[in-house]
Image 1 (cartoon, one colour):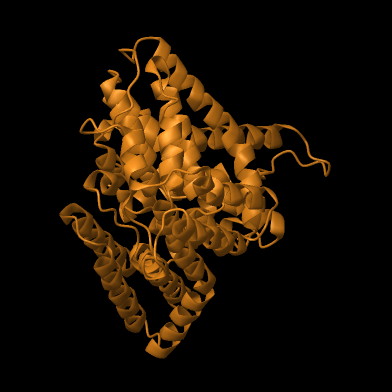
Image 2 (cartoon, rainbow, N blue to C red; image 1 turned 90 degrees about the vertical axis):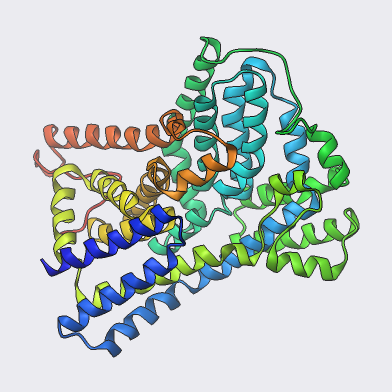
Length: 468
């Protein structure tokens, strides 16, 4: 009963913060006080809880370094003209009826390159939304295509903070995880392309012709040509990331290499000074032209402070929960649910609840991991199964919650209505196809005798569950 009261108080604090538009960091710190208070009331020593919390934060140390590298990389890609080059050339591909499927594909490609849903929505998403509306596209369908596309790469990119976080939490190899995600995401991705293409040719889209203007009627190519030298060298930092990812070079080494090349492009092509370069590594890129700034401003190490703080505080939660056993009853119930519907199903259910309560993708991932650890074994195959289950549930379900910033921020950035969530087909086709595949396998296991002669074992191939 006490555990429920504490958790309800924590959830209420989160809801108030989100409803008021406040940062959730103070709410998380209040949660820390609540959980420590619970431990003290249960007779746990403050020193023991502090040691556990500090140990959990230290374990997350490398992901914090990676976050800093991502902040520097995204600011340099903005300043070097890399993103401007890609957007200017990609937007010219959009013509009439192709705008809806191409919006999904272009936003997917951009997000896979830069690994950020928010940044992808602010750049390619904004461009596609403006072009689509000028061609008479349905705003909700366009918004859904953008939202789905920007989370394709947020889930499946070697420089995605969520993919790196999942790999860190589950102690798995990022590139192995990407291979698993490619397999599980292929059908939902192809199905989404078909849905958007059919929607376009059957009349949900209207209007034809082309447009090359962003909001306000400013031509895209001309806008970026004034702000940057769009030499072909500006795209080399992105090409380098793709090549090194295909060669399975370490993520941090890949980002360092791209950072170095981007810095050279900034100085050699865009004529930036070294002091300017050092400033933008910390504070991010800020364009002189407000039209360019609306599309490209951001990045820098300071942009990662919020997500880094969430990871640190959530990691501390894990240590406190382990010391106080506060989640023991809930985990036992989740383990029981896992045996009834499979680990994939249980993880998806927990992720949906965590997303609704936490209103934030990073916290959704952290909470789902903490609650579902008992469903999986500790061998390499089980850890890999846990990683892909997290990617196919927590990462993509969070933006489907209307009051979660995971979906609300990208939609607000591009000016799309909330109902666009219903058109973000990839985000719900992915967990649904995983649940369907898991149910089919479990049914086969239940009806077809195993090699050992057992016919009633409900063992999930994708999620090898540990005994409880």
